[in-house]
Image 1: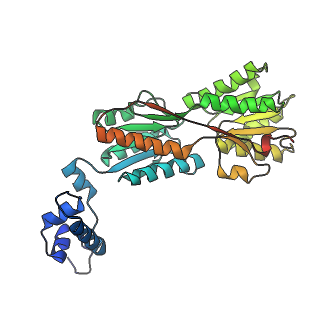
Image 2: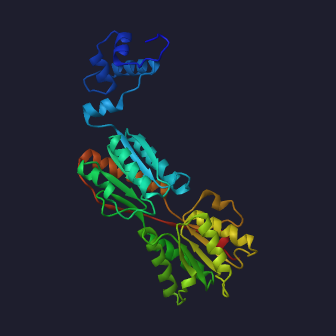
Image 3: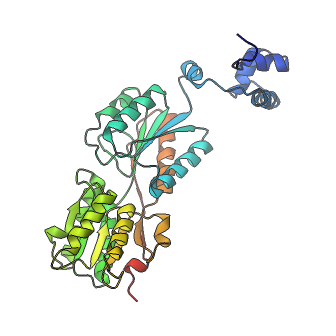
Length: 341
């Protein structure tokens, strides 16, 4: 091998630099209690200077542990999932774990592929939010068989053992709908997500029950279900605005759909909130800065991510399955899109 070619730094190089045995270097890098803190500090400093990287695969084979947590989420671009990732990474780092992140783009096929990747990477545990397409969760069975805990948040399956971190999606939609009713809205439409997902079916039920409790009719043309894409949100507005009786309030099942609905309604000449009030289930940072600012039910992504990792690490350390359910609070954020002066 040419001297100019890259050579992997080994523990033998560190040992030679410090004039100690390779076994002492190995123990120091693995924080063995028998090695003094002073020696550990020297070894780690030299390892960093030389550019040594611990071979995680080799380490995992010897210790049956990687100190790596896998994360599978639908969409990194969403503020909710960005906040969840922030909570996940912060708590994992505090507990001495690294994180591998995979994005499914709402594809169940990609979700299946990502579970295989995480299994191959020998993660110690997995944090997951399911796609809107996911019905069969058998691709998670391999983790249960190998004793690898799985914590789920937001969109979860109770068929998969492990802790669940959720919000009350029924209450979120109920509160949003009742807020519009209290403003005086009489014809309230709802753009929901796919009904096969419990998150969105619960939101639909909350919307329906709020109408029923307040004596308002449920009109079939005002309840649409979709995958909440930009095209679907724009098409929903087109359908509603072509009705003889147009809605005077809209509950959108996601933050992004709410923003698109508001923009489409404004482009059609409607005045918000005078002619149409809008609220979204989920909050994006830009909700505050669009005109008018968009009301929302805020979902605590950061806290859900932190709690998911906290529960997961407890399962890892205790070596047992915890199928507890943690319910996180929601918050109604009233802004100008649903605030009539």
